[in-house]
Image (cartoon, rainbow, N blue to C red; front, side, top):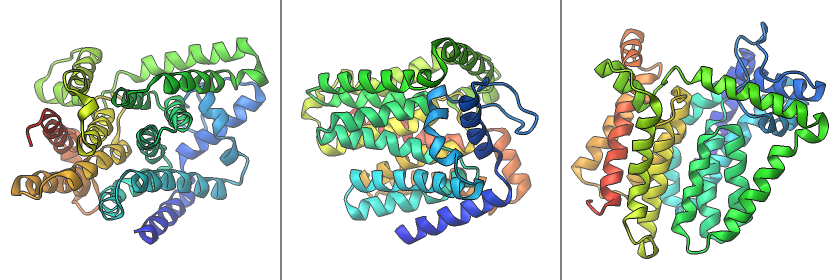
Length: 353
């Protein structure tokens, strides 16, 4: 499995290098603009897109930005793949970890082809749980804070602390690490420049919130023709996610129950994220994989799992004829099987297995 992941990382990176992948160039240019004291979020005719992460993320990208393009992209993709691979190995026994790594590999490959950060985010979410479980609160805080400054939704991983009897140290370290990451760009450019960048970043987030991506909100809009605001639907999803913790004695929850909650949160971060896109599903498939290795091998389990593999993984790959792929893309059907798994998980968290 390790050899397959290494090979996939190299092949995906070579593909991205040959195309001179635009996403990676945007990340590099953000670091260059930060050093020069320029606006991180100004439109660029060269890159045809905007930098959408926080100023702290631009600062953290410097090890890859100062290297030549090809080497920097290869190491960036290697970091993404290694973080997810190692986090799954730390979360599960070797056999179960290998199964999940095999399940998530196709989506991980697709994410690396576009030099996206989704595999890194999935790994950081899982690391938050594994380090809290081992009472390494500083490491858990670093994982959740780094994930949050890259993409906001990994902040949801802080809910793993609700499963632990001792939470104060984690909250303290989150405050310290989060404050350090926030002010770090200020040390080179001053508070005025940093506050201006965050103003622009908030504008980018508001403008970018119009497209529901591959979320549940997209299904509601496309399938039922209703244009409800996103936040009430996201609030319902968050309540459904956390209700088992609020109404269940989690102190007596076994390891399987806690792992199911990890899987549920990983899938939630894609289903209710209005900016989710195709490469984001590496996060959701990590959750699907964890659910699969915990579930009984009944015909219902295999039916749901096959539904995911066919319509979420294979249907969005080049193995599917382009007209069929385009039709499924238009109706966001890639989301549906993952939503089914999430509903099954919520039922299991309530004790119905």
